[in-house]
Length: 185
Image 1 (cartoon, rainbow, N blue to C red):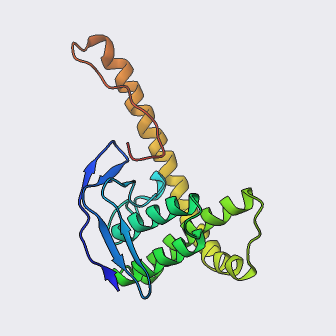
Image 2 (cartoon, rainbow, N blue to C red):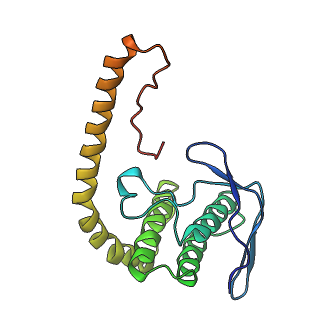
Image 3 (cartoon, rainbow, N blue to C red):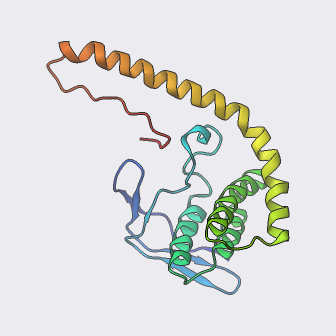
């Protein structure tokens, strides 16, 4: 029960990567192949949280598998809750620490449940309990640092904008205009 291949990718753009080779995962009863050509952003972590959970790490293979299974669920070929559960299990098999694994699972599972609510699906009481158990402490833990990081990102963007505006009239070379983004570009 594990991944049978390495991650081999090529960069598509600032936030997207494409598999060059298949990524193979063998579970207890199922086998999954993420095909070469599949595009991923690795772990979909908002910019304000990458200080704690980078977009790639020990969990990268699990994140790619999860992205693939989420695409499969959008096409009604896989259950999104099962995709979230496999994400957590694959992270455990990859040696991701307990707390990081559960926080990451909580985030993706919360997104899955949000999508279901928007589509008028009902949440199971057990899933809601799990999310509250993981989600409330995580929100309390992440809220203050997220606000601090957001303020600093905005200040840094403002400094970049001031430098851009000051240097642009005097530069003979093209000066890149700063962009504020929640993504890592």
